[in-house]
Amino acid sequence: MIKAGSRKRLLRKRGVMARVGIIGGGSWGIALAALLRKNGHEITVWSALEKEIAMLKEQHEHKMLPGVKLDDAVVFTTQDSEAVEGKDLLVMAVASSFTRETAHRLSGLVAQGQKIVNVAKGIEERTLMTLSQIIAQEIPQADVAVMSGPSHAEEVGRGVPTTIVVGAKSRVTAEYIQNLFMNEVFRVYVSPDILGMELGGSLKNVVALAAGIADGLGYGDNTKAALITRGITEIARLGTVMGGRFETFCGLTGIGDLIVTCASMHSRNRRAGILIGQGKTCQEAMKEVNMVVEGVHSAKAAMELARKYEVALPIIQQVNAVLFEGKGADQAVRELMLRDKKIEVSDLPWPEERFNA
Image (cartoon, rainbow, N blue to C red; front, side, top):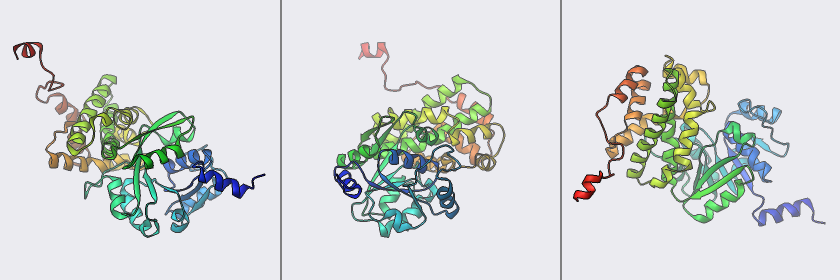
């Protein structure tokens, strides 16, 4: 008979069991902790918030994710070394505005080549860097990957079938992370296009604010379909100029993530947009949602990128005007509708032009 300790070592050697540190004790981190624990991995959850860790130790669930229970084998800690040292994988699940601070804090504990997968979404306003770029800058010795796609924590925690993508610099790293996360309700694809994935995941939050604003104004499905379709056009327009692959924006981390974020009430960006459309200020909306609204943090960065790369982003521009310049939401919609006449796909030839050529 194989002893329990020997069995764990054997499973780990075969790649079945891993030691995983979840960096961030919010709803997304806890949902992924539950998923990875179900897959048989050893889980340590870290948070800088002592009250959050105390709650998790006592209740083994997060108040923002009721019903998703973690078993007694999961370790909860505020100790940096306990969460990082000796781990096969670190899952960076802190809000985008805390990514740099957290990466800097943990940098000295991360081993050469240690794998980190970032699961948050956003662009740093000051530097215009994606979150994986920030982590790589602060922890240059790490092997940094990303995971993104249409995946609300509320549904992943309940085991609702979900499909997502892991992006990494090497296929080996991507497939290693894929194997740790994948199960019968959580399908994982891999991709080398880290930049395209992160831009899709960040900019869709800004478009989701626009979709929510339209809902708050009382507009209908026609309006939302237009915002989703033209929104992904804007995202792909900027993303491809920056070096992302067009195919990525047509996939799960592009149009897939945009659809779910614009359509679901799980989406904090859509919920904040609804409140803004109903007349609340940006600050009032964020306070009522009571969670980090990533689209607000990414909106200014998106416009800076648009100016830098000389790309037109009319929807995102109007979202910025509503959020930060006091423009009325209804006026922003009117201006979008009354822009100069355009052709939808500019490089499609007309039949007579093709014939004349």
